[in-house]
Length: 485
Picture 1 (tube, one colour):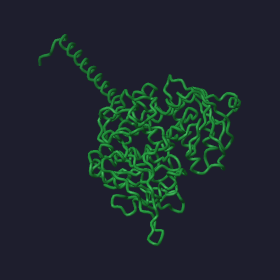
Picture 2 (picture 1 turned 90 degrees about the vertical axis):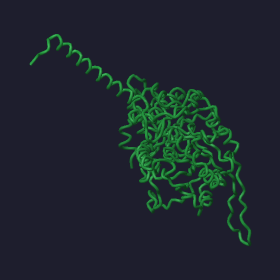
Picture 3 (picture 1 turned 180 degrees about the vertical axis):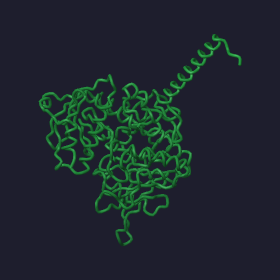
Picture 4 (picture 1 turned 90 degrees about the horizontal axis):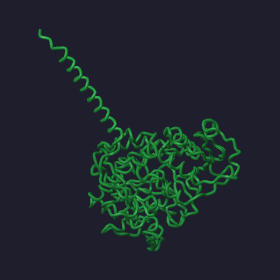
């Protein structure tokens, strides 16, 4: 057997080692790119908010705010579940996410005052630790209120625990309202969309809904759980055209806004859709325990339908963000309560769709052949035009605003069925933003909470209220003793 020379063997060994180093380096580079950069997805395509997004824009749908760039690929699961992103990484991954916080910071300093034990919860952040200074007792809160309060405190605590190393956690005192109706000068789940109610003297701080942590209803559970179920369902269905060609809704009829324009919103919806072949719209038949309903749908199952009818409640409705994860067309009266990502909605007004007509609902029989006269409500109302501008073109929209009296709901559904490419585009763009671009992801939630804490600390003035003298209850102790029944 002929042996190679020592010199040749050494050269071959060095070449082999060099090849191994190159292979490993290329592999590590590919892994880094996979984790940091967008990847292809079967569910949706990445939509980028381009540089034209203006954080000071006050008209979400008026054309001067965010614009969507060309569709690409969705962000990786590794990024969307990374709760430790820095502020700059958050801005890069989720451009325009913190518009609500940016806007309220521009309003300037506001005073935080004591409001008593039945007012908003007041807490302190000091040296990165959370403690509770003022709170309502358990006996003064319903089971749902306790759950909402507990879930949100866990969200805030998680944002502190995952604060990126090297980032400075500001010391501050904040107030949080767990009620459906938002309070100015607090972390709240929504704010009024009407500019007349959201002026310079109304520092609303919309924050992520408590369902990002958990919503203890059997057909909901939590937003992350629902997102996984919806993703699996969308893959199985294989696209918008394979969905049930009807509009779906479930809800409690009497959960309406007390305003004169919306006082019978849900009852009118049921009347408008009764017996229609295009509708699967029903009032929830609650069980005696009041925690489930015999005709309830798992939240993911709404995505089986091409059209989802959305109704706000006494104020905002927490189900909206779940529906926005679907590749379905949401049909809703103009949104009047802005949640923390509502500014990403690009509505097309049904009144701008050629051929869509409003038909007044036939009123009830008053006897003697006389029918109740039902007049058409103004649409869009002046405040809607101020809040949402002229809306978007159908080819750019990701939601459809219908008349608040539902007088054009049927006509809109039938129009969309006749224009499937337009309808499918609206549905696709919605899922691209809220699922593919990750604006409802765990990573975006933590990014937003940290921005909210920073923004709050920059604008709040809590001096002279005695908060500095309160010892407070550490979060961990509060959760075990005061937050549970």
